[in-house]
Image (cartoon, rainbow, N blue to C red; front, side, top):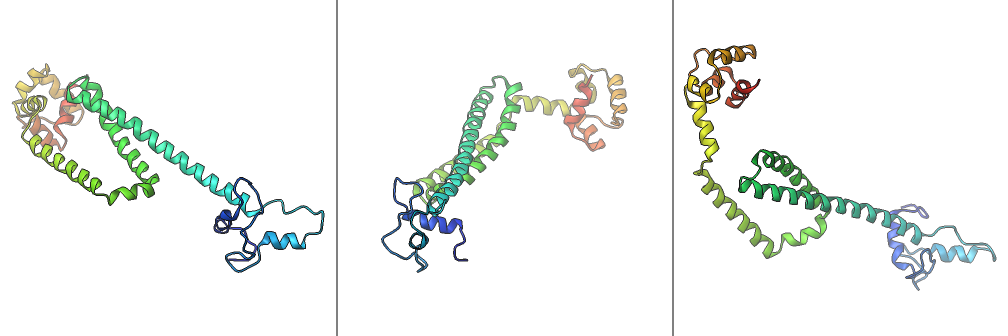
Length: 233
């Protein structure tokens, strides 16, 4: 490091030597030499300064506090943004999840829960990133490990229990897709010939298919898109 060149590291090193309560003070440690074995700049400058001449318009303490303070403000703003986003998204995802559990306003809550759920994951990752240093202490604690194991076990139990559970809506849709085309079109309140012409205009051929599921397989598209094309007015 070149002598006399101001740097953040040198500012931080000089900062503890400032006298408390006096911003910009030139008070130094009782030692007459700094950590590099050199005479203090303030002491040497004062010795060579003629009487009546003012000191330098800046000193390391004031600049170091300015730089460190600016960095601290930036970190605080990041933490405030991360915490605010995580808290509000958690609130929305939690409320929408409760409404979905009791099947209240399903036509509205599902999209909100899915989209903002992804945003909540991103906000949580950002929150962990800006608070990484204080959070590292919790990763090695026994309570943290026990909590992680409990959540993992509960998740596995719910996965195995939900595997055999079938939703009524899914059962109806699955039956509709595997029923004969004529019966499926009656359930959808659609005429066979008109629906056939409408699908052919979109490039979907139903000749040789007996179910909506087979139409999707023969045309290389999903059954859901077939149903959407049929219901489109």
